[in-house]
Length: 458
Image 1 (spheres, helix red, strand yellow):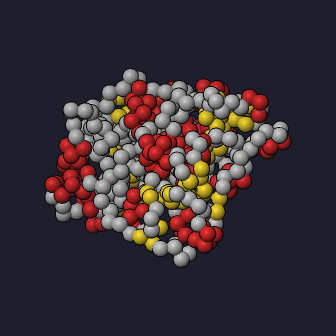
Image 2: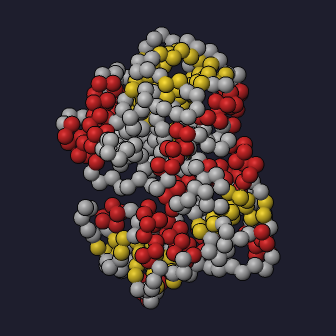
């Protein structure tokens, strides 16, 4: 028996490769299929099943493409209805893989169809459980992503999850390993650990959701203080349920080199994926910055409302395919090309460029920036913990709804370290706002003599 966790930091997502006697399964694969196919080929195994723990909202799965390319069957838990061929497994159904077995445990709560997969080793002993978004290390999945108006509430799903955990998971042996679908950094929970696996016995001792907590308190805990989900979540879930463009077709239509004269910002969004320092020094007018060095895909998903928005990529030479792939992971399939030769081609063609007006924290503390407003684009909890006195909190998470409110006056923008603030500044600048980026963010600002304020988290 062989188990490998395939963790993707940008999405804080874990897929799994499991193999026995030349047969393999993939659990919750990402959009790109070749890594899984190549892994099976290298190990001389055949992919037999693709198990999905639920209809993912934070990324577009690769299950459909992978099934087409390998002949593997897609398996969902009970109540999962799709427009493509799947096995809708029954609760308790057993699947055989070489000398091991996998049992379906229907654990509704995060979503109605959410299921976990319990693995038994060659000796028939419980070995591990693949919990998707039902159980994380230190947390459980949020219950507000699968509601249907008038049918079910977040409170209903939270109560259902409470029962699922106690009936299906907590009775299992302490020695088994929990392999979750996400780790810290995902928007699918509130208190996830940076650890990506743990013994179930340890989780029974340390995870509040498996502790001595009443159903009423559990529901209150799960439904209090969660930020609204990123706007792309419902769209990604719909793609996972109904299908999407094949990855090969996507690359054929997207991986096209464009000259500077072919770049038209009036019809397409120019997305600059370089490092924020490079964007500060020079960029194409009205382009948006979201750097590949950060949580690129989730920020794109939070900020670009239209999945069908034509996008042109500006990237470091050699990073164009990566940018297209990471956009596809969250359902953005309408890249129409990339700037051939990177930004240097633009510069060499004599095309007009702009810089981002930036200032050091020390200079800002001494002279200010002549701003009307200091915008802190960190999360509400970060702002509440400590912030520059007099600043306004405008979380980047919700910029898609609030950016228009901040286009008047002079704005000095900062985040924690300097990545999110450049994203915000690029968006506001494209809308005509006068912006100044404070380099280094709050981490450096708090070292100056500027007064610090605190507020209570509401």
